[in-house]
Amino acid sequence: MRYLPAILVGRVTRTAVRMVRPGGGSALPGLVVSKLAPGILAKTFAKFDRGLVIITGSAGKSTTTKMVVAIARAHGLSVFTNPSTANIKQGFYSSILERSNLFGRVRADVAILEMDEGHAAELVTEVIPNQVTIMNVVEDQLDRFVDPALVRDKLAAVAAAATDHVILNADDQNTVLIAQQNLNAKLHWFGIADKSLVKTLGYAPTYLPELPTPNTTTTVLELDGKDLKLACHGKRADFELPNRGMHFAVDAAAALESAKQFLGADFDLELARRTLAELPPVFARGEVVQVRGVPVEFILVQNPISTQLNLDNLPKNLERVMFAIGRDVHDPSWLWTVDPRNLSPVDVVTGFNVAEAELWLRHHGFNPALSTDDLEAAFDHWLALPEPSQGIRTVIFSADAMRRIRRMLGFTSPDEVQR
Amino acid sequence: MKPIILGTAFGSRLNLNGDQGNLLALKRYLVAAGFEVEIRSANTTQAMLESDFVLVGHGSKAAMASIETHLEAIDWTAVKQQVPGLVVGSSFEWLAEHSQVTEMIARGDRVSQFEVGSLGTIRALGYRNTDSGLPNLVASENLICTMLHGPVFAKNPKLVDLAARAAVRSARLEWPASRSHELGSWIETLNRVCGQIWQLEAAEELPAL
Image 1: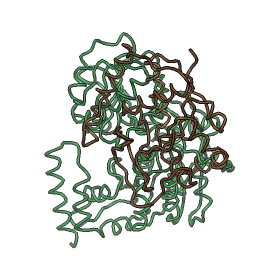
Image 2: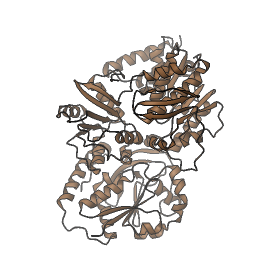
Image 3: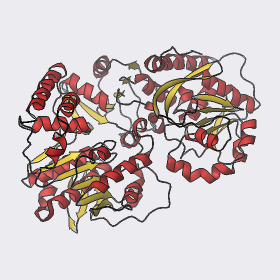
Image 4: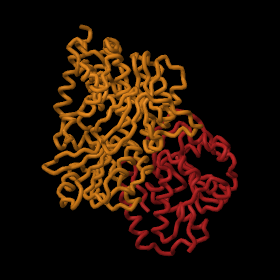
């Protein structure tokens, strides 16, 4: 009963926000509840029978969380989770608001949460996770985090808070360093067999003498396109990934190892494999969307390494490319760490940071025909350009530009893509 | 014509915020002005002295620790006296900590935002993310030291022009008496695009070139 007023006020706020911004706005209702009922977070997260599972790190936590949640649900568990757009404190309050009854109670067997790497350390001073998975440390959002070593320190604090299991990336020297501290929980490792591929994943260099790579219990054996060959605790689990890219294969390995640990004896590898094989692709990770009857490939770039990997993986001689960098990129300096030489000519550059993107592109010899901060006008202009003679239209955008384009196109579900 | 040598110190490690983009911006400007340009690694005093311009970028704590002994081995007095250059972020802090510049570190609250700094009459916009208290822009003999990380040359046409002319003098070449069409066109582009960035991030207009 003590949380009833906060829940009511939060829901009214949420309704109002959604009237103004359909498909958006999870932060404000959460902020309201956090002010009115700050204790609801710790109380809620302490009440799940199968505990609290946290997935964090610089890159891949969103995909991995979705995979672990899907595996848990396939095993018959009721799961409380958060959308990737709500992975900081206010977002968790918003998620509770979304799933709780009027008295603030959430019915689920387990909480599986994606946590922002900058906020997770503070959150684990209030909530105690049973299990923590740390994906990696990359040079990302330096306007917030300043230095990768500081991110590593925060993630080490999250690992130290786990009571049962810590799952770490064996191929990232940062997570290997995290494992060298005294952890209360049991350690488990995931990774890839072909170590020559590790450098393509862009983990932040430590410039220290190389620590031995720990033995992994879940291992990516081979990836050919989307066809993944994987070993989990001595058994094979081969399937087609929903999205292409070695980083998705690593996410799948992390997800299987994470699910295996919190499900314990209930874990069914074949069921988990089938679940991952049937997952819909993550929006804007190289999948095709029909826009006004025209197929368009949307590619989300979030940091230097994801931008570099995505540009490197683009087909040659693409035509009809739009590049959009939004307000989420507070300091666009990192664009200059990316080599765009594999990018085909860009027709349109847009987004809040259009001038920063244009400056970077022009220094690399690109001459976009249209440059405007009006995203809608840019998209309409670009879509009206003649059909490409080969390949399909491609939009490369940051998260803010993605959200705005999705709202503009009326996409409110994250799964509106073709498999 | 002999090429202008742009040297970069530990370029692969001192590029945390795209600082190596400064060399790209400088090269692009010099090429537009009609010069040949070559970018080389310059990790020693000799390699720096053989350069016509040297960049010492900004690196992570790990990167700075990994090159500490190399930085200590460099004769900074000779470099400052003989070579124009740009020293960014953590490398500027390193010089301050080792009394190679007169500015002192005074730790305080961290600032993470776009700021405008001054170098004489030149105003330059860039991203400041530091708690060091060191200035946004300052000259130390021939070196420009800055806490504005990333491609500060790219965003500030007057600053890149200053650096380009210094590199040309260092190479004992002559700056063209008249502005070529290519340079004029490139400056026009820089003024337009950088003007938009200034409009977004600064409380003042771009001092156009």
